[in-house]
Image 1 (cartoon, rainbow, N blue to C red):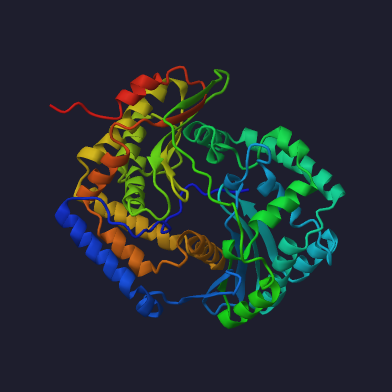
Image 2: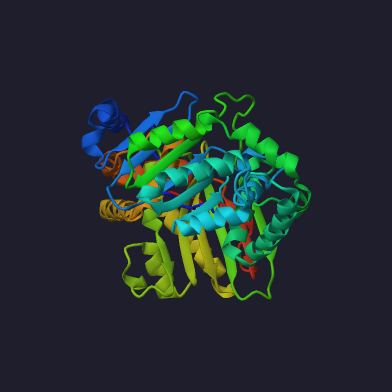
Length: 479
C-alpha cells in the first residue's frame, strides 16, 4: 500500500494558466504551440523516446528503451479505493495482497521460487485511484516477467485458505499503520476534507470490512475494473517496444474492451477539521490543506512551484537557517517544530495542497501562525528571485526522481493513466519557465486566500487555535 504525496513533473493540462488578459494569450500561445508540435517532435524532445501503442481492446503499451541490462515492467490499472463503496472499502488493497498467493498454474511457492531464481523482484501497491503490479528483472527475462504479471491478474485462484491467512496479515498491517502518525493524520485529513465521499475513506478499509470481505467481493472487483482501456503495460530499461507490444497482445489480448457503470465517483471538498487530543503524546502532528486541482488542470504547475517555495525542513538538516525557504528559516531560528513538509496531492478532479508539521506542544500556535503567514505572503508579496530558485529546484527534483528504470517505468504508467501520453521533459520545463511571481500570486490567491482549510491534528494539541481563528489567518486585512 502506498500513495505518494507529491508527484513532480506529473501534472499538466490543456487549459490556460490564470493571469491577466495579455499574459493569458501569451501562455495559451506557448502551450498550444507545444501541444500542436508534440507529436511531430516527440522523438527529438524525449530522448530516449517513449513509445506508445494500443491493443484492439484498449490496453495501452508504453515503454522507454535505455539499453541497460535490466528492466522494470508493470501494470498500471485505473482502479483504487476511490472506486469502492462503504461496504466493500478495502477490496482493492486486499486484492493486491492476494495477487501473489498462487494462480491456476503456479502455487505461491512456485511463484516465489520462479521470481527468486530469475533474480527478479515482484511488488505491488494500491492508492486511492490506481493499483500497480510490477516486476524488476534482467532484460532477457522480460517475456517471463510479462507472463507472470498476466498470470497473477487474470488467473489468481483466490483460495479460501489464502484469503483467511491474508486477512490476518492485513489486520496486522492496519495496526502497524496506526503507529505511523503521518499516515494516521493524512487519513484523517482525507476523511475531513472529503467527508462522506470515496476519497474520504482509507485505502486499507475499516476493520469490519477486512473481517467480512470474501472471494466473491474480490472476483467482482476484478471483473468490474480490470478492463483493457483501464490498464497500461509500462516498461523501462533494456526494452524492445515491438517485443513488449507482441507480449501484451499475446497475454492481454483477451481482456474485455468495454465496461459499464463505472463513472468516477464525485468527491467534493469541505473545509472542516478533525482533532484527536492526547496530551500523553510527546509531539503534535498536524496537517492543514486547501483544495487544489486534479492532475490535468493547468494551475497544478504553479501550485507545484508554490509547494516548492514553502519547501520542507527537519531538525537533522544542517543548514536550516540558510535554506531558501523562508518558512524553514523562521522555524529554524525560532525552534518552532521538529519538521514540516509541504505537499501537493493530486487526484483526477481535485487535490490537496498543504503542509504537515510535527511540533512541541508549546510551539503549535506559533508554528500555525507562521505557516499561514507564509501562505498569504505567496498570494501578496512573493518575489521573482524566490520563484526563480523554486523553479530550478523543482526541475532538479523532477530529474532526480527519474533515476533508474523503476521510477521511469512508474512515471510512464502514471502519466499514461492521467494524460494518455508521456509528457516530454522539455515541454514540462518550458511550462515551468512560463511561471513568474505574478502567476504564483494569482494562483495562490485563487486557491489559498480567504479559503476554508481542512485540518487534521493528533496529539497534545491544546494550543492549536480554534478553527474560526485559523480561518481568520487565511487572509490579511488590506489598508
